[in-house]
Length: 83
Image (cartoon, rainbow, N blue to C red; front, side, top):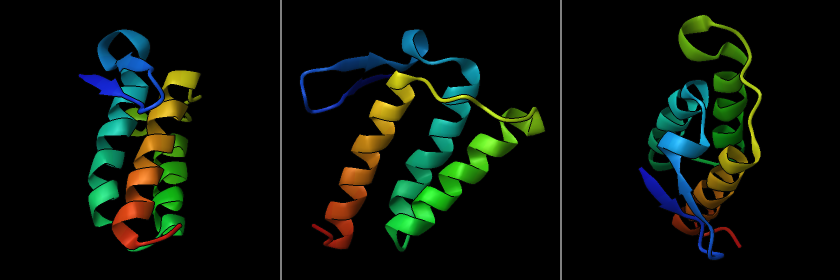
């Protein structure tokens, strides 16, 4: 998947993220739509990073992963009407 961060950066999730990060990111795309608060989204992110892929253990997020998460948080803020 090609993801545009809005600041001119393009992230190719197949190339720029490891499989563990992609797995967590898939969960976060769902939580972006389901979360009732930014705190809930962040808690789900922390939980997913801690558990890892199929319980494999903690995932160390890289810069590309973190950039995508920032955009997801911005979109969530917009959906929730948070400045």
